[in-house]
Every structure is written in structure tokens, then in C-alpha cells.
Length: 355
Image (cartoon, rainbow, N blue to C red; front, top):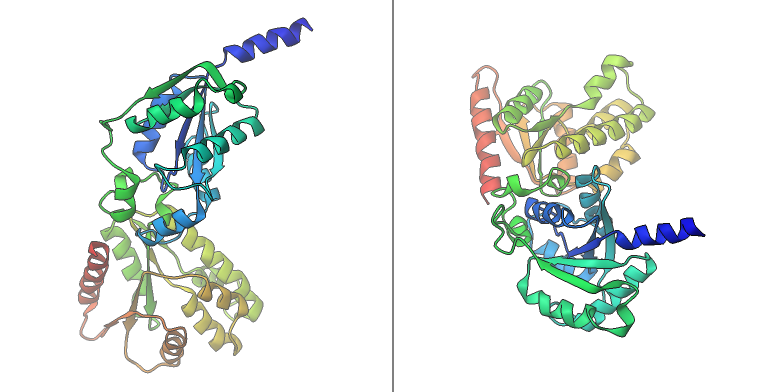
């Protein structure tokens, strides 16, 4: 009994703070704000606020390449603060609540439900929006039904109002991600990274160009896994081999995007794999087909030897079948125009980033 009493006393001494935000997306300004807040309490509960309809509209107005789910945004925070045990992530569903600055009553009710469900009592609310302080007072202080979840002496602390360290907003990140790349945490960057695929004629220097472009843009690249597979297996590939190859290729692409600097350069993509599958096995591979339908590349550069080969004809048929747009750059080994191909490729990519 004494031990339980002591435990309760210790529990009461623990100071809990809370922060609310959409984190759409998380940026270094958010990270700095959270680090400042957690230094004033024992535990900080960072609450990700989501609303499907609002979030879809934010995505449509952004330059994000993929829409982050609620779980993605929770993971942004979990990955960023995984070595700080006193930062804990919560999720608040705001659907059905009138948009800010309206709906404070409904929103505060939802917050109370969340805290009660998780048995959390808050001592301090942190915000960098001065206009929210009065609403926090009205909805979370001196109300009979909030004693279990808010301390009687609840503090509302404003910090980093001027954003002195990082003058950046999530709105600016969504609109101009490439100009503000340094403010995007590494776990978030894959939602903005551009994917550039180098495809085309066999033996046209695609791998060489991939390496050159990765060096030029100081970024990552994805190898053509089919080449690696052939080195370690038979040169004669069957249908099941392509099932393995496409999944390995997909992982190469995912890893490259995660480690990219604004863009990632791919030494192949799924239509190229399907072309090889058709030539080697006589039919389209269903696994590859799934990846073709569920993925996209921002830029596809086709290096064309214009030799009317079986491979080129088949690849171009697939590009037409799936209505894929691409840039075609002629390559003539006799004229030694590879530098011209390289210069034109960098120009295409830079123009795209600029837009």
C-alpha cells in the first residue's frame, strides 16, 4: 500500500506537456519547436491532427509526389524522435469538426476524449500561435469536466513565435520543396523526391549516364537489378526469375528515393523489365504489370540508337500502350555525341525542377 502511495506521488510530480499540429509535412521548424518544448517538461505528447478532406486539398495544392497518410505523418515524428523516449506521439482525428478558427468547442471535446482514453494528464500546452492562447484558456482551464486531464494550474506557454531559428512554414514547404530542401527532414523527403528513369536502346550508355547524372545532381541512383541477377544466376531468365527481379528492383528504387537529394536517378524502370520479360519468356509478367500500373516516374529519358531493334520496338510499344510520356535523345556512337546526351539530360531535369 505504501509503495502504491509513493508511486502515485511520483506520478503526480511528473510534468506532461502537449503540442498540436498537422505536420503536413513535418519540417525542421517543427522539430526545433518540439525540442524547445520538451526541455521544459518530463514528457511531451506531440499530437498529429488529421482530417481526410482537408488533407486531400492540401496535397492537391502541393508539389508532393505522394500523399502521406495519417500513419505516414505519425512515422515522420516517430523516426525523427526515436532516440528521445520522453517524446510520445498521439493521433487526433479532426474529421467532422468545422475548420480553424471555428469549431473550438468540438475540437476541445475531441482532445479531452483522446487524453481520457490514454490516461494522460497535461500540465502545459505549448503553442507558437499567440491567437490560440485565449481559446486554450476558455476550453481547457477552469472547467469542471477537465480536472482529470488538465492540471488545475495548467500553463499555456508560447515559444518560438518569431521562428527565429528557422523562418519556414509547412505551406512554403508544400509550395516550394526544392528551394527549401534543407528544411525537410530526411524521413519526409521521399514524399517530394523526383524520380528520373534512364531507359532506351541496349548498349547506349544508360548506366554511364545514370552515374554521371547522380554525380552532377549530388544524389542517389538505383542500379538495374536484372544485370546483378544475371551475374549470380543463369543468363537465361524465366518467368519466375522476373517475379524476383521486379521486387528487388522496386526495393532498389525505394532505397534510392529515401537517400535522394531532391531527385533520384534510375538505371531502369518497370516497362524496361517488362520488355525483357516479353523477349525472354514470350509474355508479359503479371507482377511487373502491377508495378507499372501503381508507380510513376516524373521524368523518363529515352536514349535512342535508332537501330530499329526488337528491344526498342517492343519498349516503344509498351510506352504507347500505357500512355507514358518521355524525352527521346538520339545517340550515335560514331558521332560520339554522348556529351550532348549528358548536357541535354541535365537541362531537362533542371527545367523540370525549376517549374
